[in-house]
Length: 216
Image (cartoon, rainbow, N blue to C red; front, side, top):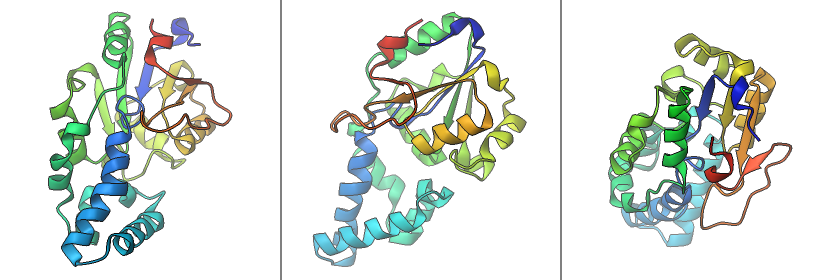
């Protein structure tokens, strides 16, 4: 599935790819609306409808991923709330073995994430992922989310890579499509970003169900 001989750089998404998306889905879809209802004295369904409506309006923008933005919008301490349910943060099976194997092949491994820096700190503190990357690129530092067409040009300025000899693994179809349009040579989607949900439609892309499938 992967042409390792033609691969110099591996770009990896975080949430849903290396980490189980169940934590994020539970946090944003269940926990935040519940705490918003408590904070503002609203009925559960009314709070959920209001919060999800706000999410929808921000989708596709950097604000959608920004914990500082949501702290201001919802009048909640989002980083603190994330800590309260951090026991749900989990690395997908075989990920750490895969990263060790790729490292042994002397490939450059770059984490490329839309996650906010404060979220990243919480997740690195909770998992053993932190030391496995040659570099970490956070879209908040570049001012654009990964699904934006100009993101990859901006990334080239901070972490240059030869796009034809690069593999991106991501669970987001808009991100994979923007990377494909940019010309990144190899692309893989993830069938099951959230371990508690059914497999997702990965559109026109090849995909993996487990990192064991692509172990070097």
